[in-house]
Every structure is written in structure tokens, then in C-alpha cells.
Length: 467
Ligand code: GLU
Image (cartoon, rainbow, N blue to C red):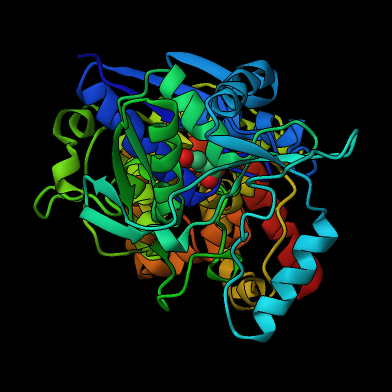
């Protein structure tokens, strides 16, 4: 048997962390089993589905590296297929036309609500003697009035629902479009899906779907519901807990590797192991290790993983990724050994790509803005002799490398009796505008002799004109 899975997003918004996790589980399970991963856009909610959302979802999946083998199918392009199935059920007397108007249904729903009951369609149109000519209708499936409906769930075991709980629900709306439950079942059957892995917010739909499978005489695929992702306060993950869309993470400088690694571990585990490459995840992922209990989203851990990937990916790849971010800030930059060195030096202390970009304007522009505190403390007449000495020594044709610079600084220490920090901090302010940067020798080497000389001279000028 070839394993066939699907990811079936409704394009009514961005791809969220929860949806991405569902996609990741399906993808890993499929790749682990050499199966086929199918992408299906569930756009039958015509009012809420948008093209932008479809594009954003596809983009986010591609960015995460979750490639699909078939699709994207679109439910809106498959209407005749659903109609054919509805017709089959009508012909077999397993479904019927319902002429009740939305107003009538709404009134009954309100009435039930008043009595503290949940409204269930009472089957008014089940056995109509005559059908109103030309009136709009929906189509409902006939469901059993009693008995049990069993859902065999791979992560939770057998779950039983009381048939009384389920009314004759609509399978085709008045506009001719199928309802969600109907389209899902027809598609999963037609696309020969063998395993359905999805969020447990769909658990309540499962008995309805089981009834549709049975009515259509289709085999029910294996179903695994994975637990909802919760925020740290144990409530459903939402905007309140920070960014929830995949795109927002991409834009804030997260790497797809980090998101995949983090989300794969939300609800699935392999001992205590935290770090997994994609290949390793594919190798180790099984449904047996998917847990039942809700997974808590921990942004700190994701951030930590992101920092780990930033430090451990080849620096040239990180450099390539930060180029657009740097250009966005209006700076010129290209992929060269200077940029790679900048990345190598900055990435030790950052957690996102944006951190790299936001902490290092001084590498990309000569317009150094002195931080107020830093300049008051370090760009003073006391620093003047240090800077002058530095300029004098830098003019020698020594090699402008970390080692060469160390020698120069040592000479200044020996001649002035100052400590390294007393020389390094004013220099740092002169070169970067602030008091925090990678090692001063590394910064100098990257900036190069001309820039360093120019900036030290600027600092001298600043001190002379402000003191
Ligand atoms: N389209 C549904 C959603 O976006 C998923 C349906 C399913 O997985 O069965 O939530």
C-alpha cells in the first residue's frame, strides 16, 4: 500500500503555527513512509476564501520546504465531483432536499437556545409529500436516529459518539456548493487518502464524516487527531501569545529549519532529543510517538533553536539570507568575504536574522551615530591621546589583521600604562557609535584600514570641536 496524505488548508487567512504543525506532521509521516503528500485548498467558503491567502499559504509551505507531490487541488474547481456524489445519495434515498429557509431554521435554533438545548434539525423535509416548485433548497444527508458512531483514532483510540447527537446535516448548500464535511470526505476518498492527520479541532466533525463515508460506501482512512497547540497560559494559541503566522516568523528573521524542528517537537517526541535535522525527523517520525496531551507553545525555546541554527548553518548561507534585510534598511551590500566575516562575528550573540541586521549598521554605512551615553563617557579629551597614537601607529604599513592590531594595541598599553579596555572602549565608540560590538580587533579588521582611520579622525574632530 502506498501511503497518501494530504494537507487541506482553508484559505481564509495566513498559514498559522497550528496549520504548519499539521502540514509538518503529514509531510514527515509521508516522507518517512515514501508516500505521496497531497495539497488541497479547501475554498468552498466563498465569502471568506481569498487568492492572497492561497498565495501566502503556498509561499509559506515552500519556504518551510514542505514540498507536495500532487496538487494544489482546489475544491472550488471540483464542484461537479461533489454534485455527482450528492446525486448518488439522492438516488439511493440517503439524502433529501430541504426547503426550510434560513429564517425558519434560525427561529428554531433560537427557540432551542431559550430552552437551553442544542438545536438539531428535526427532519421536517425528510418525507415531503410534494416539493415546492422552484424554491431554493439545500441537501441534507439522512442520519441514523439511534445507535453509536465509532471513530477509530490513531492517537486516542476508539471514540464513540451517540447518533442522537447528530442531525440530518446539510451536505450541499443552497448555492450548490458542498459543505466542508461533505467535500472533505469525497476528496479524501477520491484522492485515495490513506491517512488523515489533522488538528483535534476537527474531532467533532469525525462522526459526521464517518456517516458520509458509510453512506457513500467508501473505506474510512486511518485518522489521527493531534492535540491543539496552547499558549503558555494554557489557552488556545492566539495573537495574544505573539506572532502566530509563519510569514510573521519569516519576516522577523527566523529560519525554516528552526520552525520545522520546533513545531515537529510540539506533540511529537523522540526521547529528550531537541535538535533534529530535517533528514533525522523524516527518519524518526512515527505516529506512535505523537502524544495526546496539548502541546504548549514556548516562544523562548523556538528563539533558542533559531539562534542555534543561525550559529550552525554555513556563514555564507546566513549571509545570503541577511542581504535582503540589509538592503531593506537602505544599505548597499553584496555577498562577499566581508559580509561573511560580519556574519561570523555577529551571529555568536544573536537569535534572529533581524538581530544581525539591527545590531550592525556601522558595517554598512559611514554615518556613525554616536550613542549619547557612549559619547559623553568616551569621546572626551582623555581619549584624544589614545586616538592620536592609534592614528600614528595605523599609518605604518603593518598588516591590518587581528594579530597585527593586537600588537599595536599592546604597544599603546605598554607606552601609556592604560588597560586594554581603556583603549578598546573609546575606539569602539569611534568606530561603531556604541559600546557593544563583537571583538574590537575583529571589527577593525572587517572595516579595513581606511575606514578605521577615517572614523578615528572623525572622533578626534568631534572631541576637539565639543570640548
Ligand atoms: N480545511 C480544514 C482546515 O483548514 C482542514 C480539513 C481537514 O483536515 O479535514 O481546518
